Length: 360
Image (cartoon, rainbow, N blue to C red; front, side):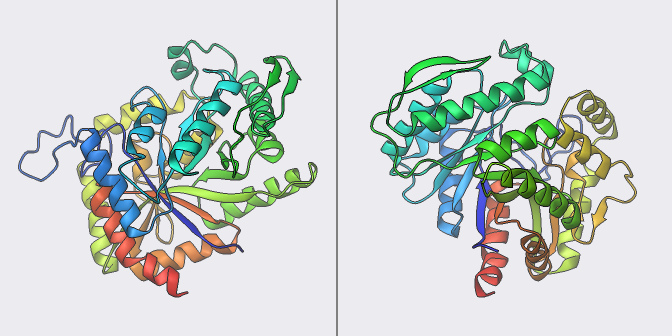
């Protein structure tokens, strides 16, 4: 079990005191629920808060409903000094050599404060918005080639690659980044796991009960051994932590009470149409709305209205720290966390849970 790494989240589609999708139809006013636009000033506050509290990096998402991750994080380089940026991007929308160059440039300008979160994409409709018509199987095959080209380009030596999706000659990046940016990657399907085993540094999964995460990690370790590689592992989760158990769960109930049932039905129907195996597994966790605590301290309420990570670690600071230790025991080293709103919840976790983890 290696050293734990704690990361926060940059809400580039906006922030607030509600789970995404709750406000639009609630009609509730005077409840401190105003939407916070993702302006540079606000995102700077989130980044500075994460840095001050000791988080290692912030994950910046990618997709239709959020600001471009490269441009946003580049704007935050001079606003921070130690914080790293875990930049999410979709392979195939730009060439791998250009992606390698962008990451190397970012590393040079930031003093090495960049890592990549490779998002192959599990929604054909979303991919089509960006002109990508490949099937899910083809997208993962392309990602495999994409990462091979990037790895070779980062060596600083000219390299050739000829595959089904890319044919490059003399690909390289000068100066070569040192250290080479870490590559994070997620995907629960068989094809995704093979891509991870062959190419990435850290496999990142949406949070399920510890035993299920442990099974996933064991499978990835076996696959990586075939390529004589070892991976590190991380989970992506929300967090609701307070001074007492009762206060934390009261907040979870408050979030749930303000979710419009019509929005829940619409979101679940939409999410069920996607191709993502990980999303399917998240939907299974919140299928029983009367029993959203799917494991002690693990609440699946977020996934009722929100795509992607649908679970939250909920409890007192000690309880959340204990749950984190359970994930550490099955092989998780990286914890990419978020909460509503992202400044306030960062303080609850940074001042309540991180000191307990550090003492342990």
